[in-house]
Amino acid sequence: MDFNFIDLSIIVFKMTTPIYDFVKKYSESGAARFHMPGHKGVSLIGCEEFDITEISGADVLYSANGIIAESEDNLSRLYGSAHSFYSTEGSTLAIKAMLALVSERKGDERPLILAARNVHAAFVRAAALLDLDVEWIYPNEEEHLCRCIISPRDIQIAVERSDRRISAVYVTSPDYLGNISDIANLAKTCKKYGIPLLVDNAHGAYLKLLPEDMHPITQGAAMCADSAHKTLPVLTGGTYLHISPDYPEYAERARGALSLFASTSPSYLTLASLDLCNKRLSEDYPEKIRALAERSVELKAKITSLGYKICDGEPLKIVIKADESLAHHLREQGIEPEFSDGYYTVLMLTPENSEADFERLLSALSSFDPSSLAVSAEPIAPKPHRAEMTIREAVLSPCEIIAVEHSEGRICASPTVSCPPAVPIVISGERITAEDVRLFIHYGIKTVSVVK
Ligand SMILES: Cc1ncc(COP(=O)(O)O)c(C=O)c1O
Image 1 (tube, rainbow, N blue to C red):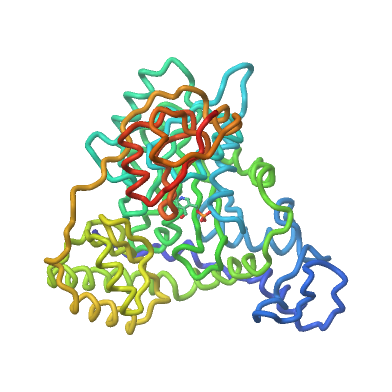
Image 2 (cartoon, rainbow, N blue to C red; image 1 turned 30 degrees about the vertical axis):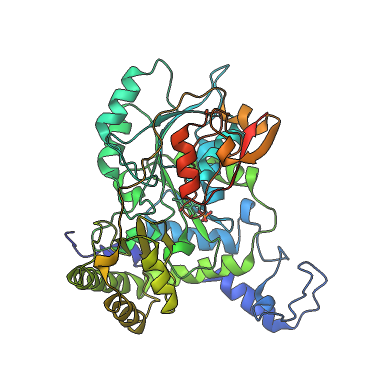
C-alpha cells in the first residue's frame, strides 16, 4: 500500500471534550442523584460515577443541541462529513438508520436495495423492520462466507437489468477478513446512476487516519457506519454514523432515523469515551496508526517467514490461513484472536497493543509448526437462492426452531448466524439447501428458525 502522509488540515481546530468534561464535573460535584441509573454513582465495578442519564445540561442524544451536539461537531470536522452522529448501540443501530434514510416510500413503490451478499445480520434485521426488498450481488467465484468484493460493472449490470428504482447500493468494507472494496470507483458508478452508496464500515473507523485516507466518506460514499469501538479507543457500542457533504439531506433526518430503533437511554460512559476519542484523533492517533501500519507490515513479513500464509488486506488485521489448531495454540499461550473458523485466524491490532503483545504473538507462532496446519478448501459461500417470501414476511411468520440436520427444504425465518462473523448463511425467506446445512454444521450452528 502506498502511504502518503495524512492531510493534517482537517484536524487544525481547537478540540473540546464537552461530554467527558460534563460527566467528570458532575461526578466530582457530590450531587445527590435522584435520577437514573439505579446505582446512583456508587461503585460496583469502578465506572459508575460517570454513568449518568439525561440530567439538566447533559443534552439528549437524538435531539442534541448542547454538549453532545458540540462533540458531534468535533467529530464531523475530523471526518470531513456533512454531519457525524453518535450511536451507543453499535453499527447495528447505525446500519438500520442508514437504511431507513434511503427507504422513503414513494406511493406503492417498495424500496429495493442492491447489496453485496456478505452482509452482517444487522442488515437483514433492518430489512425485516423496514420491509425492504433486496437484490443480492454474489461473488463471481467461489468464496468464503465473509468475502464478496463487487465491481462497478456488477452495479452497472444490476442497475441496467432492473426494471425497478434502486434505493441504494450497500457494501461491507472492510470485511471480517480484512478485504477492502474499491469504494472510490463503486461510488463513481453509483453517482452516475443517482444512487447513494452505503458502506458498512464497522471495521474501518481508523481508515480516516491512514497516511492515504481510505475512509468511505472521503472515497465518495453517501453514508457509512463505523464501529469506533472495534478499532479506536472507545467503549463497546460507541459508533459513528457519517453523512457525506454531498448528501446533506440525510443529515437533516438522521436523528429521527436513529431514534426509530434506538434506546432512549444511551450510555454516557460510551458517549464520554467517544468524546475523548475525538481528542486522541486530533492529537497523537494519526501518527500512532501510521506507525502501527508500518509495524504491521514487518509483523506480517516475519510471520510469513515462519512459514504461515498471510492474506493481503487491511493494515490493522493479520489474517492467517489456518485450521482451528492455531487458534487453540494461541489461546494456550494467552493470546486471544478475534476470530477463527477453521479456515482463517484473524488478529486485530490497534495502537493500544503493546510491543510486548507483538513479541508474545511472534514467540507463540514460532513455537507452532505451520506445516502441521491442515488448511482445507474454503467453505463455499451461499449460492443464489430463490426468495420464497419477503424478508419481513419470513421474519414475522409463525415459525419453529428445528435441528439444522432437518432443515433442508424449509424456509429460513430469522437470520441464523454464528457470531462472529454474524454473516447469515441463508437469508430469511430463502429455502434452505443441503449446502447451507453443511455450512451451518461447519459454523457450529445447531438449530435454525424456519417458517411453519
Ligand atoms: C461487518 C460488521 N458489520 C456490523 C457489525 C455490527 O457492529 P456492532 O457490533 O458495532 O453493532 C459487525 C460486528 O461485528 C460487523 O462485523
